[in-house]
Length: 85
Image (cartoon, rainbow, N blue to C red; front, side, top):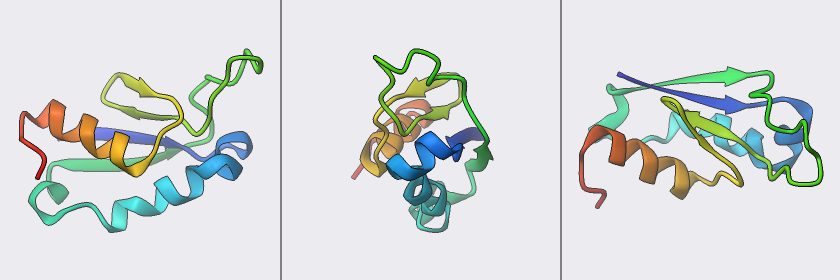
C-alpha cells in the first residue's frame, strides 16, 4: 500500500491542493486498492517562499512540487512498478 499525502494547508489549497485532495475519488480502479490518500495540513515545504511551488504532495517519501493529477499518477504507477496506460 502506497500512502499519498496531499497538502491542504492554505497556501497549497488555493494553489490547487483542493483538486488533488478530491482526486482520491477518481483514482483508476486498477490501483484504487493499492493507494491510501491522506490530507496534510502542511508538508513543510513553503518555508522558503521565494522558491516554494505549491501545491505539494508526497507519494511515499517522494515530494512533488507543482503537483498535478498527472504528476501524482506518474509517481504512484512508478512506485507500484506498473506501466501507466
